[in-house]
Length: 196
Image (cartoon, rainbow, N blue to C red; front, side):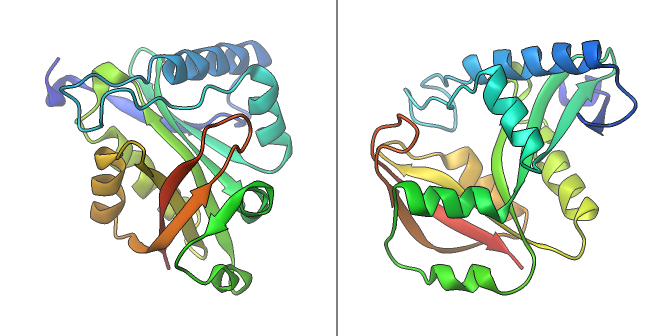
């Protein structure tokens, strides 16, 4: 499938446009995308990098905590990717529960209205077609008056695709964060980026 063959729409999963059965199907597909997010050695990412897979209860928790989930839907209605935009409390929970700030001033997030881009994932077969950037631009338009913070792994695996996505989207690196055993994950180091 070439880049020009993809027609898509971006829709919020909690939209009144969907029945509860449709939302369930969308969540199932998002979980499937997470499970398949292992990257191959020919990818932009290092082999072995794995996206954390959330079960349905974590998706529901995120929705009830005020997170907003935006989906890329192909023309046939199949979920092809998503972005989770959460309240700043999700990032602050990460800092409290196991994050060690290495070289930035986390108090900067006390000023202004911030949103945390918790996760952005595109179906492996549809990457490098601009869908991640489309999602990023969409949420920047939705939350016009707000600032964004996000993070991506740099150790033990370097997530080059996320680095390029955020840089192209206008985000600036402000430092790094070491995360130890947070929600069952092994210790890792993450780059922290902001768009103000």
